[in-house]
Image (cartoon, rainbow, N blue to C red; front, side):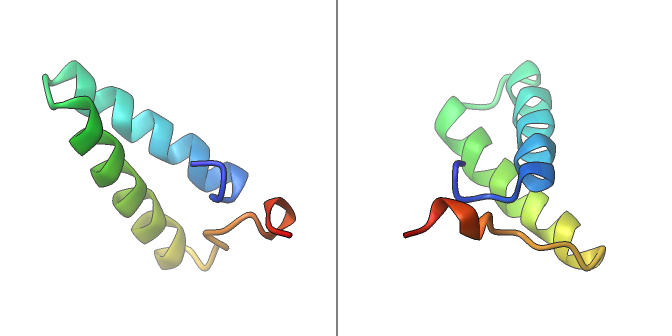
Length: 55
């Protein structure tokens, strides 16, 4: 998740934690959470990537 913008990363973590609490497999929860957090950001016109972490 280090490539995500900070606000998107926080949203993905919140989503992943909710999915894990519902019993979803960790790997799947992370993949779904990242996808949903990106969708959330795109609908709000927010950047999804943290370009500061890329060389």
